[in-house]
Length: 67
Length: 67
DNA sequence: ACTTTATGTTATAAATATATAACATAACTC
DNA sequence: GAGTTATGTTATATATTTATAACATAAAGT
Figure (cartoon, rainbow over the protein chains, first blue to last red):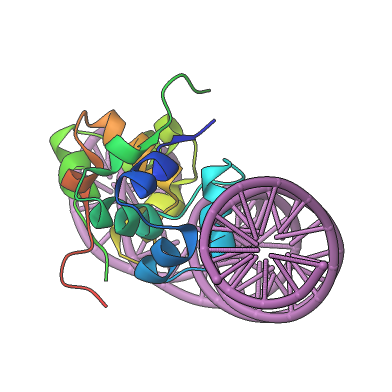
């Protein structure tokens, strides 16, 4: 399972799903799905999100403890 | 466009596409497609590949200079 | 109470990654 | 030169991400 800190960083940057979505060029629902762990993003999307927060991808997404 | 150093690291680790593919649980062709930039991987696959080489994802994949 | 804002949720469609199988080629070994 | 190994390549099928649209709810402001 993928653990993500999108919500944590999103709140830290004081933005809502809509704003983040627009910044990385996806839909609001897509951000929501990711935050709730509904599916694994593409590398491109993960990259764009991490870049918004100025952190490495591994800081936001974590597959530790997996299959 | 996505630039990748999969081949470079794969050779450094002295493995062929087949071996790397098996290590990360995909097909040989998938590794080949990635090396030739045919498509963007999922975060999971990018993560697994980077982990094989013990480097951060950004060391292997790079979207700098994009859209 | 009504309106707005943020988020959850669900169904379906579209796009894209990956699997699978098949064949090609070039390098190397015997 | 036949056989093996590594890789390229292409066509089709399957799986998964993402888009799109619609409706629900709860909180906050007026």
